[in-house]
Length: 318
Image 1 (cartoon, rainbow, N blue to C red):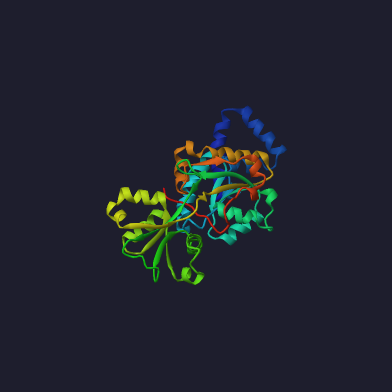
Image 2: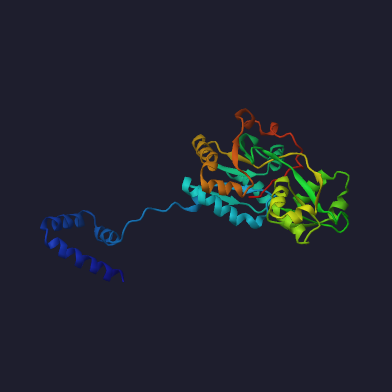
C-alpha cells in the first residue's frame, strides 16, 4: 500500500518537474545529500497538522465539595471546561471523595484546588499538609456575600424527628455533621437514626418535601426564596425549624512555586464573571464571582478561618 502511494506521488511530481529541469536537478542533489529524502517526500504528501496539546498536559483545577452531589460532576466539568479551554491549557478535574482529594493535595504541584472552606480549614490545621506550598487565592461570592446559612425546613404536618427522612444535597455524612451543629443537644444515635435522602441541589431538597419523598429538607435561604416564587402552595406548607451560623463559601487554593503560572491561573479565574461561559460555570457552584483574598492572609491560611472545622456547607443552586 505504501509503495503504491509512493509510486503515485512520484508519477504526479515527475510530470510537474519535467516542465522545470532546474527543480528536478535540485531534487536529485538532495537525494544524495539526504538518503531519507524519498521517505520525507512520501510523508509530506499529506498535510502537516499542528501537534495537539494533550489533555494530560493541561493545568488541572481539582474540585471536591461534599456539599455538592457527585452526580453533578460531569455537568460541572463540561461547563468549566467550556470556559477554561478558551482561556488556555486548563481543565477542571472533579474528585469523588475526600480521601482521593487529600492525596492529590499531597502529591500534585503547579495546580489549583476548589473546595469547601471548612475543608480547607481542616487541611490547614493538619500537620500532614505542607502549608508553605498552599496559598489561598479566592473565596466565592454569591449576591455580594461570601457567607451563607443552612436551614432545616419541615412540612408543617411532619415535625416528629422519629423515622424522619431529610433531603439534602451532597453527601449523607456531611448532612449529618451540619445537623449536629444545628442541633447540638441531639445525640449521635439520634442523628444516625435520621434517614438522609441525597439530592443534586439545595432546591431539590425542598421539592422532595413537596412530592412527599422527605419530611424535612436541609437547604439554604436562597432556595427557600426561590420556592416562594416557583411554588406558592408548597411554600405555605413549609416551616423553618432552625438556622445554622454563617458559613464561608467555597475557596480556591493555589499550590505552586511558579509565579507566572499562578498569575495566569488568577487572571483566568478572576475574570470568569465577565464571560457568559464563565458565569454559567460559576453558577453551578452556587457562586457569582471570586473575591481575592488579602495577600498577607493568604500566606497564613491557618489564621483565616474563624469557624469550627466541623461546620460548613455550600449553597449550590443555580
